[in-house]
Image (tube, rainbow, N blue to C red; front, side):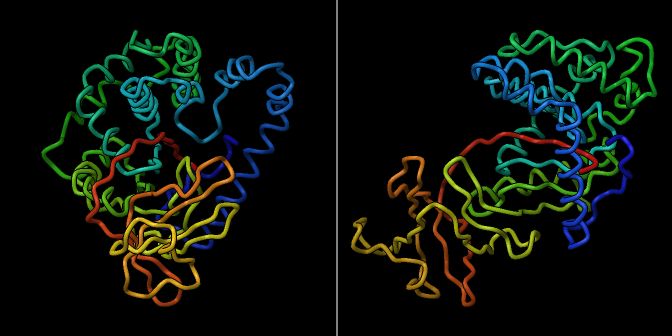
Length: 319
């Protein structure tokens, strides 16, 4: 896995799709060769499996899996920020929702001095909610730094120079601060449509004009709902088939089941709210974001409906 070529991602193309597929297979091969999957599923209970999973790190992701076990949201973001700053080759920030990316940006901004101090000392700080995984995080912080610095002897020596980050400083007054930190950063991937688009201007202030905000899917804990026609068009999607039942309620009609429309009889130009029924127990669950059907089967997202949600963050470099 360490031999993957560090080719920066510049756009989501058929060639990139093939590259992503190949590297996904590489990750699977890694798990099989190291017997990680077998060991994981041999554990007798979910709690024991979690303890093993917390020791792992997926190749090419900046954060170890232990970060995902942090339930305190602020600490969760802080640790993702720390491991991202340790990785100078970061190319992509991938979050479920743009609001989470915005929160990550603010975390780096607000805790810049503390993050640099952690990198300088090589010590994970005592922050809320990390007690059960702190040892795993500490090990991964040193291992990650050693790889980036060709096997330094000590943890603090292994980490990238904090002085380099100090020289960059908090250049928040100039668009593109994150490109100074991560020169290869090229894309933010997130659900950034509808009300989530309200945070895009501030995200762009951090990332600058050379980093694109792109979307691949509308997905959440409720369902896999739609895929984007064009990753750079944040508002046009195609509803995908799945085990879930997707219906549409006209926004100008009473909230009654008799007004629900199916995908084959929606009217172009009329606004609908998505209503979802899943095999996991949601029965006609309202997602809250109106869609505007387009000819050819696409749906535009209406940006004028208030909505708020948080999601997990994945940060990775050589995808």
